[in-house]
Image (cartoon, rainbow, N blue to C red; front, side, top):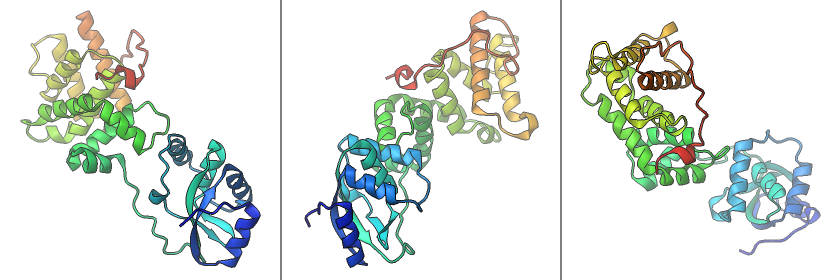
Length: 291
C-alpha cells in the first residue's frame, strides 16, 4: 500500500467520502499544522508523551508498523494528536496509518509497555529485580521526560552499577529474620545506595558499611563508635518512623550524607535532625555513576 500525499482540503474530502476505511498517509509538517489548528475538542497534550514521540522521529526511529492508526470521526481528529503535534513541531514528515471510524468505543488501546517490561523481555531480569532496576533507572536517568528507549539505553550504559546496587541490597537482608526485610526492603536499600553514590558522590565503602550496620541494628559496629551511633539512629528511625509512616527518600539521603560526614570527622552527631554541614553539589547521575 503506497502512502498518499494530500493537502488538508484533499484529506477532508477523502475523510468525508469514506466513513470507515484506512489508508497510509504521508504526514507532512504543513498538513500536521493544519490538522492541529482544526483540533479544538481533543484531550490535553501530555508533555512527556509528546517529547518521547519527537525523539523517536528526530532520531530516525519512527516506524508506522509500530504505531496505532490515527483516527478521524466526521473529519475530526479523534485519536493521535501527540503524533500530529510531534510532526508539526519537529518539521519532519512521517508515514502514518489513518483510519476513519464512526466512534472510538471499543478501540483497542492495549497496555503500554514499561521499562520494567523491557528489562524482563529483552534483558533477562526476573520480575522482582526488573521492577527494582526500573526504579533505579527512572531515578538516575538524566534525560528530561525520558521514554522507554532512553531508559533502556541508560540501563545498558549503567547495567553493572545498577545490578551491583540490587545485589548489595539483596545480600544485606538475605539472612535477616522478620521484621527486618519488611522495613528494609531490597528496592529501598538499592535506591538509597544508588542515589547516595551517583547523585551525592558519597564514598561507596562508607555507604555500604552504614547500610550493613543499620540493618543489623548497629550491633556490627564497635560499641561507642561513630559507626554504631549513626547506624543505631538510622535503624530506629526506620523501624519506628515518626508519624508512623516511612521516611521520604530525600530524608534518608540526608541521613546518609550526615553519617558519611560524621564518619569522616570521627565525631558523633545527630544524623536525623542535622543538615549536612558542608554543601554537596548534586552531580549529574549519568556522569557520576560508576561505569
